[in-house]
Length: 68
Image (cartoon, rainbow, N blue to C red; front, side, top):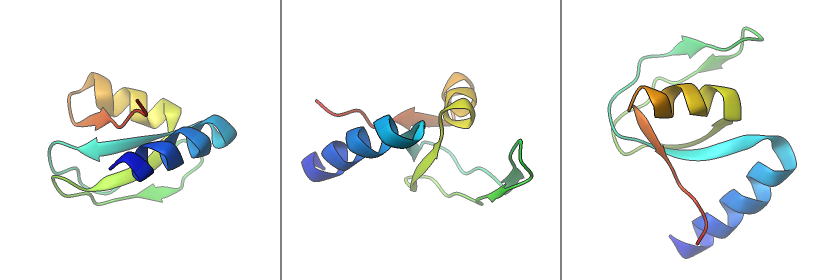
């Protein structure tokens, strides 16, 4: 998990994304630029655009994996 957190920090800083862990299943959805994401199952990990990640965090569907 430590290595995953380091990778997450470097990746998110470079690309405006967040590494998240899904707390609930989420069906496939379409992003702002019509790109498809998912479907995701509980415990899946994904690197999502920050805007989408923040929305899912606010809805309690995911939690961000942060470096320590």
